[in-house]
Structure formats: C-alpha cells, structure tokens
Length: 171
Image (cartoon, rainbow, N blue to C red; front, side, top):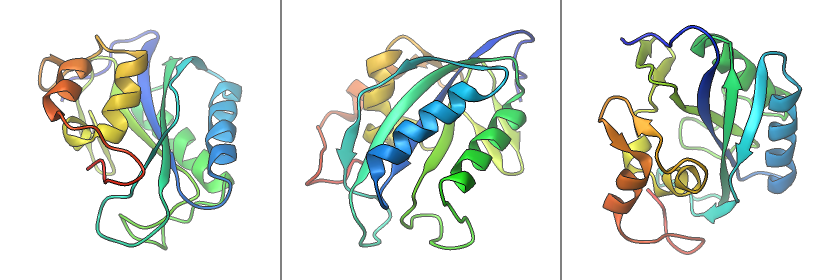
C-alpha cells in the first residue's frame, strides 16, 4: 500500500446512474460533492450513455467523472461518496454488485495512492478495462497516471480500442 501524500490530493470519482432521473442524479452528486467541506470539484467530464455490464437486464447508464481536490483521506472521501449515494436513494443491500442503481460513486484514483483495505481499493480494480470510465476520465485528465501500472489513463483508454455507446456494453 502506498499512502496518499499529506496535503491536498487530486482524486477522480466515477459517477453512474441508471434508475429514475439519471441526469438529475449525476448533477446532484456533483453539487453534493462541491458542497462538502474539504472537497473542491475542479473538473467535470461530459456524460456518456452506455449499456450496463454484468449480464443483468436493466436500463442504460449515464456515466461521468469528476476531478476533486481534497485534504480528506481516501476512507473519508469514500464515506462522503457513500453518504451521497444513500441521500439519492441508493440501497446497497438490494440490486447486488451489478444491479440497477440511482447513483454509484466510485473513487477511481486518489493522487499516487495505492490503497488495499476492506471495502476500499484504489486505484479502482477494474479501471483499466472499463471504457465507460476511461473515456470520461481521459476527457478531463488524459495524463493522470494509474499508480499501479505506471501508465496514463489516455494510454489505457487507447489500448481498449473499440468505441462503445448505448447499443453496446462498455465492459
């Protein structure tokens, strides 16, 4: 585990929603993050509509990525993200890992930190294989480096090749 440096860190958070007013959930998540003490939203990607992964039939997702600057620890940032999810109606006890959700907030990167704790893995373990996250992340931070792989998110995105969208899953 590589700890986060002290002082402000740049973190990237993936946003997803496929239940209810999806765009409203994403906008509310960005506003809620911006309203948090010790969190400043510094960039927001465009929104991408994609088919869900995991094999469960469900509506398409809207996905985006936000860049934040924070003095919080990775765990404290996760706690804020999960509270915001609950406030938007997310119930982690239903739907399972791949099920529909009003809002999903995932910490993708947290500075150069590598975190392996119960309930928290940073960088996000499936980041290198997910176009629906790498696309928006590349839009706002193409040179951000995946600390475990030593590669830019832009190079990870380019390595995936094929485009995806509403008609095809983005893995």
